[in-house]
Amino acid sequence: MAKKYSAGLVSRGFWFQEFKLTNGLLNEKKSFNEIKALSDEENIFLAVSNSRGKETFNEVKRRSTSLDEELIQLFPKLNIANQKIVNLIAVMLLNELFKEFMIEVFQEKVHQQQMTLDLKDYRAFFSLKQRTNETVASWQEYTLNRLGSAYRTYLLEAGLLRANKAGDELIPQVLDSRLVDWLVKTDRQELLRVFTGGNG
Image 1 (tube, rainbow, N blue to C red):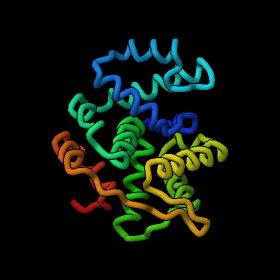
Image 2 (image 1 turned 180 degrees about the vertical axis):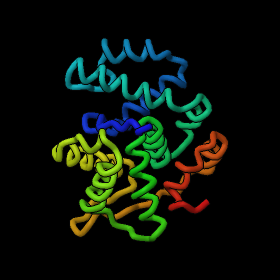
Image 3 (image 1 turned 120 degrees about the vertical axis):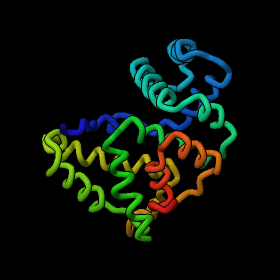
Image 4 (image 1 turned 90 degrees about the horizontal axis):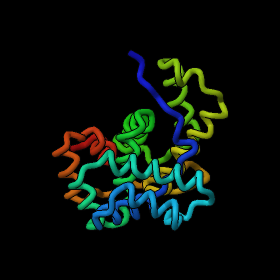
């Protein structure tokens, strides 16, 4: 059965501040219905329109819901760098194609100590997926370019990439031991290996 891939990330931001705010409210025992009301009535996500506010809320709700209560409670105890990694982990849990990019491209780069990422790396990844998946094969070049740009933005905002004209530089982050423990305990070693280059 063919995998179901989505290009939805082209319209969704990294939204770290929104994700952080949502987790903070969850830790204050606010319900998602209460957070939605705050978004609708007080625009707590500072959205440019009502529809964008609804889209932002729905996405950060999905991200927070993809985690468990233990990680939500750990979240505010982590430093900013690791909080951004948690946001990225949530995106990987929700988006199979992005997760595969992180495993097949980012992890492999770190493993091989090839610490640059450029346009041809994104193109090669999507080209492979086009040859093996009908859904990706049906996407226009415009969509693939936008998706590659979205992936790059996510990595930049997650602190895993530094913009450079000669090829963006990979910046591996050291994961908090408590986050490592959570990934192991929840049987998500494949995501842990993304950040270690396949080691550990």
